[in-house]
Amino acid sequence: MKQLFLATLLAAAPMAAAAESARNIVLNGLDVVFVNPDVEAIDRYFSEDYIQHNPAFPNGLDTLRGFASGPTAGVDYQIGNVIADEESGMVAVHFRVTGFGPKPFVGVDIFRVTDGKISEHWDVLQEEVAETVSGNPMWSPAGE
Image (cartoon, rainbow, N blue to C red; front, side):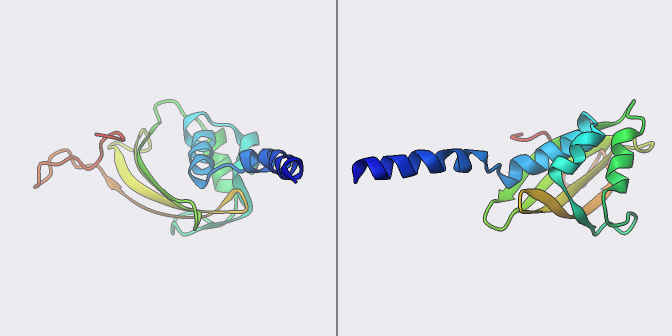
């Protein structure tokens, strides 16, 4: 009986190790679109039925492929804090991006991961304000 249990446990171990966390899927997906663009890798992290809630972009992967294949000189996508709920597959990423316009933007991306791929996206985005009423910055690197 003990050997059967051990054999079952060992057989299941590769499957458990192969399941990538929603957090890592999102961070890897952002990396292949904005940080180290790789058009070929987009299909690995994003669902073909990708749902986009940003009003400026359509559903699907064409826009992401465009970002990954376009010029990236001067664009810097910085990831701050990341919050992930692995049970629901929801991941929120606080970020700052420069190079898309004359001023830096700060925002939050919210993603749903389904069946190991990013399937849905929402975001809020605004120009960064250097001096805030509270004195607190709009964005800071993770852990600060």
